[in-house]
Image: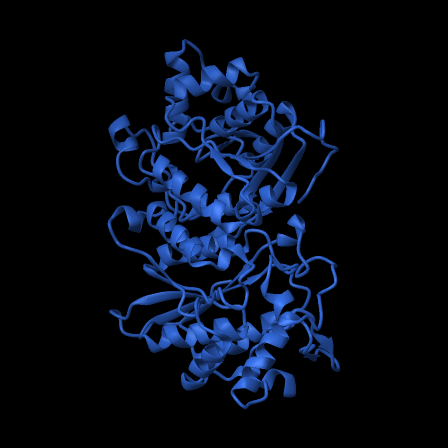
Length: 241
Length: 241
């Protein structure tokens, strides 16, 4: 689970970065690195239907350079209740209004709370006061735990939960993308050297040969990416692989 | 992990009860049951040094009667940083002042935040608005995540995190023991039918035959129990087994 490499300069501040391997978390990692943090990535294996997401997180961490990359196994499948881990059909070809209203079927119960709780444990152990998470309240307004008021409440909880908080060291949850449109996330990522061909956001990847999967291009997540790249006059490299 | 049995009356409210198998969580379960909740227990295997704690949780859940008992595996060992999961010596024979001041060596980073995050996921999936946790701010004043202000902050976060919260259904974190002295916890448990001989609180159990372990009687946790039973004119049944 732990994969530590020697840290950079001892005074370099450390950040925990939650990394799914998607477009948003890749850009978030690049931003944390760009702000001068020594980045410790944390990824979760929570019974995703497609391991391709896990491979993407590995590739992104490697290509952007992290001080360590930890994997945490979570058996969310036992809780059920979401298309991402259950056998419910992923909706396809929905229009923007259907995508951005209400809580999506791909919602996983308490997911960000569980992820942030683990990130908090790691932050405390490695002496970090900074956690980065690539939540976005624009594209996925239906997820309650992607809203700024949720993040602020978790940050307050985190500062009361830990030894560091008791000792007066403030912990910050950074959500640089929270109010950004997808086009700005892509532009920023490109400027900071993210190779979006390595990322994976599709909810329902299709087989394209032995151990090779292709983004479906039709689920909400694929459509949002695709449209944003098109608005920038580009093609989504994850779709053209 | 899941072990569901048919629920009681469909209108009976459900509660998620965090159950370690110790004296406090056993009493908490008995209180939740006494308040009329259909109880769904959740226990964690986080690399404890002694499996005897896990056996105790199983025995307590069985003896008090729960609607389901879920086990969640957490690899906290990878984070290090505590006597409960690391190979640091458990302190023995400390006086009350040493026990109740500062953050104890047995502190596990972000433990209650991780446990409550999982409880929140389960609450959402089973349609429960009530989570019970046996934290106590009196005996273990050094744990930041046992304080009332921490619990209140988590409750607020939980209500912002979930679909239920967004739909206006209030979720409550119940901490019935938080301000109780150990003697009151024991008296209440006895009145509600808890068999404390089944519970296990020791940080450093000693071998007493094949697969048999005995509480050490000397770690902070044993001493606090022992003294409370003595104050009530009893012997701790976990020590006389």
